[in-house]
Every structure is written in C-alpha cells, then in structure tokens.
Image (cartoon, rainbow, N blue to C red; front, side, top):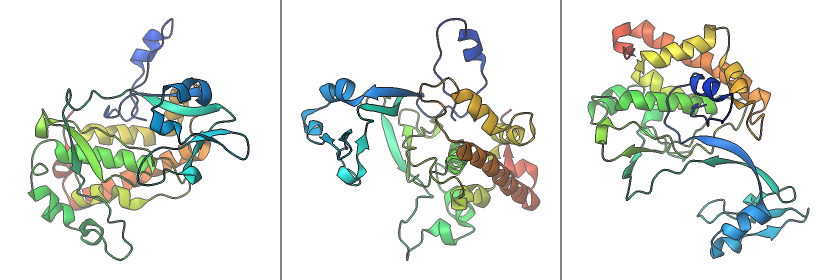
Length: 276
C-alpha cells in the first residue's frame, strides 16, 4: 500500500515508473511477493542455530520457526507445501553503523493490560495537553508524520505500533520509517477504531494526505480498485483477499468521518497543514 513498487524491465518500464503512489508516504522499504523452496533456497543459507528449528510436520511439510522470546516455537511454525512457501522479500535498510537509526516509543503505544489503560485511552485531551506540548511533537513535521503512520495502521488494522524509527542523523527533521507491519491485514470484518484515535485527539493532518484519502472516497476508483491493480502482477497475486480490499474502502470512510468531526470543532487552518 505504501506503493514503493519494483520496476520491471522491458515495455512496461515507463508505465511502471509513472504509476501514481497509493498513500504516497514512501516510508516502508519496498517489498515484493515471492515463492521459495524452503529445502533448497532457505535451509542451505541459514545460520546453524536456525537449522535446529527445521522439522517435518505430521502432514509431511517442511517447517521451521524463528528464534525470539515470543511465538518462536513449533506451534507457530512456518510451513511449506510441502517445500514451497509463499512469502515476501523486502529491501534491507543499511546497518545501523552506516545509517544510524533510533527507535522512538510511540506516544500512543498500548498498555497491553486489561486493567491498566494507557493515558491516551482514557484522556480525550491527551494529545493537546501532553503530546503536542513536548518536543519533538510541538513543532515541525513529527506530529503530521505520526498522523500518516496511524492512518496507514488503521487501514491495515495494525494495532502493534509501539515504536517507530527515525534516522538519527536528521533528528526531528527525519521522516519516520514505517517498520514492523507484520500484524496488518488480520480481521476483515472488524475495524479497531482506537488505532485512529490519535487523529481525533490531535485533529491535525497534512492537506496532501486528506486530498489523497478524499480522492479514494469520491474518485472513479476506490482504494480497493487501485490496490487490486497494483498487486495484479505480483508473483503471489492476489496477495489480499477481497474482504481485505473491501475493509480498506470502509476504513477510508471512517477516517474521513473523523476529519469531519475535527472540522466541526476547529477551523480548517488549524486542522490542515497546507503542504501542497
């Protein structure tokens, strides 16, 4: 959805580079779908410690799991069919000693506790009284970058945004890097509206972002149409099932409704950052 798409050689080159971006944020490393043979293309290349996690499932499929604190066990394994696996490949960012990055805790990180809520979950004025009064959110681009990030997370249904990355060299002038989107596109019939609560609390958004969202809602092609076209030539097409695409259009409408609420309480010059 970030529309940092790979370019193919040949006659389609010009069409590909002129294809308009979808959200236009360009904050996620480019990613493409691929089919790989676990036994022939992955197993020979992995570190010895990871070799130990490979096994054959009762169904005869080749499986493995990662090495981490949570969910890295045989009950959360990645399995082929029996050897072939659909997945995604993403461009790796330069190592931190080349491109120094700094993880920042999100002001809207979740408490993950049923009894103890985070401040933003109980205080409607959390953004105005706390976030926007402190650097780096009290000036510059950062607060608008966060709104873009939460819009993307809401569209994909990603609740797991507890950190974001900045390029430390640029400090507060750095565009945020949208990493760790693995929990996106889960439930198709449910919209986790707390993800977009930062937009309602802050009531600020780039005009370019609003115009793009509005065009998805009123234009000749909805976001679902553009996503379907964008993924049509991917190796693992269709990538997303139709209910996910329908959810995108539904969530666009809800984001616009939040912006309407902001405009009913604030003048447009306070809501929109004119970056056009």
